[in-house]
Image (tube, rainbow, N blue to C red):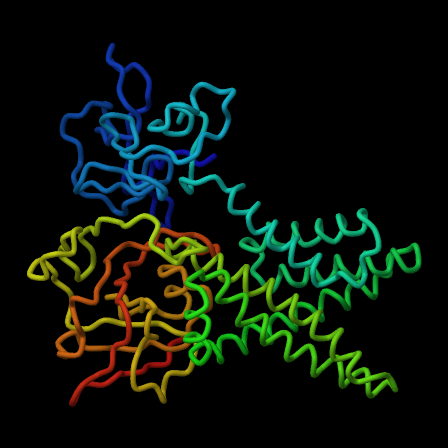
Length: 436
């Protein structure tokens, strides 16, 4: 449970600010809704402070004071009504009548429960678990000889997939490799070989790292192929890294087999199956995480919940209907943070993809990762000029605050979603800075 912030202290432990919120309890014979800011001295709504040190408050969520709303990640909450502005898409438990009030927050009992993400965590984890289980069964068909063994391999893949958003796709691959090695040694000898388990974990993690790296390098070249096949981020990443894993596994497996006096092609086939399975699973997990982070449907690639932009650092306002560019105010400079070396780039973005920019050009590697919730720690910052005629304002899809926590980061920075490719014109250029 996460309670509401009540007291803010400085580094010396001295109180610098007090907060108070409506508590869903009778106060002075009146029933008040939970979450509304109130005077921390007398708990009334008279002389309520109008400025605060930071914007987190009721149950740890973001107070959107300019709109008198609370951003609870999945949905917006009205603290005056004590109700969400949109219904919960899930009815979690049909045996609990509170679940049928889909506009309430935390089963209408915020004194006991909170909902940090605004979503059902188990749904995403179960989806990834089914993906991992299916892939693991298919890649181990040669090792499965009965239903029980198939169920065991599915279980290993399910667990690896379900925890992939918490331990990263590489950690998930290591877990899957360790589990598969444990099953293989048990079914062949009746005991679990600890050395084989450790080797399986290390080998699978290393191979996943290589396939993700190759996928990142090959991404710009194969994106046109994968985008012509599917718009699903899950399938695009799975295909890309699966292909890299199949090729790498075939080469490595064939080479090792030949060096040990075996048949090259037999080893290549086994290596391709193993490498393709690891790559496909790693890519699927990474693609699913990317889609959830960006608010996209993992299977169609479409925006799930368009967000009405709010005032932000250097961004005044943007009509949520996206039909009046005269209302768009952006800084002269925008920035893109990336892990890949961009010194030879002459353009930003990929055709058909969304380019993520931010008005904050003062982030370091750590703060960029946390504020923008990036999947990889960036090494470079790219600066562009919005006065360039080639920076087409009509290509801006949305301006929003980063609220996702898929990769375990905090979020909270601002991003501008630009559709397509930006290529500087004339004297304009991409200014690259290495960050630390």
